[in-house]
Amino acid sequence: MNELDLSAEISALRSTFSDIKAVVGVERLVAQIADLSEKAGAPDLWDDPEEAQKVTSALSHAQSDLERISTIDARLDDLEVLVQLANEAEDEESAEEARRELSDIQKIVGELEVQTLLDGEYDDRPAVITIRAGAGGVDAADFAEMLLRMYLRWAEKHKYPVTVMDTSYAEEAGIKSATFEVDAPYAFGTLSVEAGTHRLVRMSPFGAAGKRQTSFAAVEVIPLMEETESIDIPENDIRVDVFRSSGPGGQSVNTTDSAVRITHIPTGTVVSMQNEKSQIQNRAAAMRVLQSRLLLLKREEENAKKKELAGNITASWGDQIRSYVLAPYQMVKDLRSEHEVNNPGAVFDGDLDGFINAGIRWRKRDDED
Image (cartoon, rainbow, N blue to C red; front, side, top):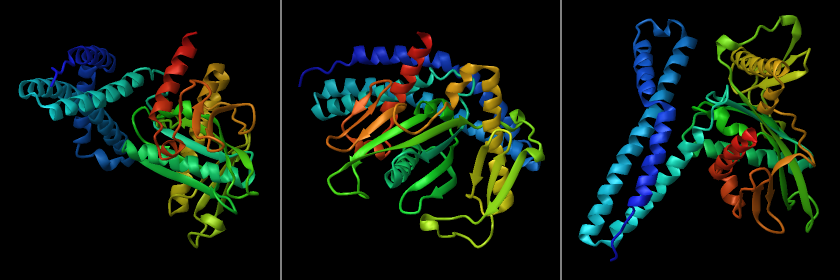
C-alpha cells in the first residue's frame, strides 16, 4: 500500500486542541475538581440536600469536561502510533482504521471548538425547553411531539440527563405543549440557537389525501437559574391551580390532583408541572422555572440585548428559523446559517449537532458584525 501520511491533519488537530485547552483552562478545571471533591467529601454535605445536589452536579460536570480533554489527548497519541504501525506492516486495514479515527477525533474537537464560542452570561447553565404547537391544527400538535422526541433523542445520544417536567396532550394527536430540562454543561448555550419557530411541510396524515400541509411549532429555551439568583415572588402575585395529570387522549394518569399550574398575574406568565407524583414537588419545580423566566424578563428590561435569550416566538408564517420539508422533496434547512441536510428522518431521530454547531457559529459571526 502507499505510505499513509496524516501528519498535517494531526498537527492541525493538535494546534486547534491546544487553543481549546487554553480557553477551557485545564489547570483551573483541575483546581475546581479538587475544591468540589473536598466539599463533596464533607460529612455534613447532605444536611442541606439542595446545596449537596449543586456540589455533586458541578463536580460531575467538571470531571466530565476534564475526562473528555484527557481522552482526546490519549486518542491523538494512539492515532500517531496506529499510523506508524500501519506503515510498518503495510496494512491497509489498519490504515483505514486510522482514517476513521482521525475523522472521529476531528468531529469531537470541532464540537469542543464550538463550545469555546459559548461565552454568554448564562451559556454554561442547564436549559429548560418548552415546545408549543402553533398554527396548523392537528398537524401542528403532531409536529410539536415530533420535535419533543427529536430533542430527547439528541440528549440521549449525548448521554445528557433529561427531565420531562410537563406535557399537555392534544385531543386528537400530538401535544399542545411540553417542557423539559436538560441538565448538562453548556446546555443553555448549546440549545439556545434552537429557540424560534420551526416549520413542517408534508403530506398530512390527518387531512385530505394528496394535499400538502404546513404547520408550525415554537421552541423556547431559557437558562435554569441557580437558587441564589432567584427573585422573590409575592404570594399575591401568583394564582395556583391544581389538577390531575393527564396522558394522551385526556386520560388521567393518577387519581389525585397532583399537577400544578402557576400563573404570575402581573406578567401573565404560566408554568405547569405534572412530572412529579406529589403536589408539593410539582409546585416547587414550577416555582423554580417561573423564577427563571421572571428573572430573564427582569434582566431583559434592564438590557434589551437579553431578549435574544427567549425571544418573541409567534409560531406562524414569517418568522421561522428552520424548515423541515418531507414533500414534495426531502430537506431540512436552517434559514439563518443556511445549513441543510437531505435526510429529515435522521434529524428527527436526534441528529442535530450539525445544525446546532452551525447555529452557534452563525450567532457568533452575527454578534461580531
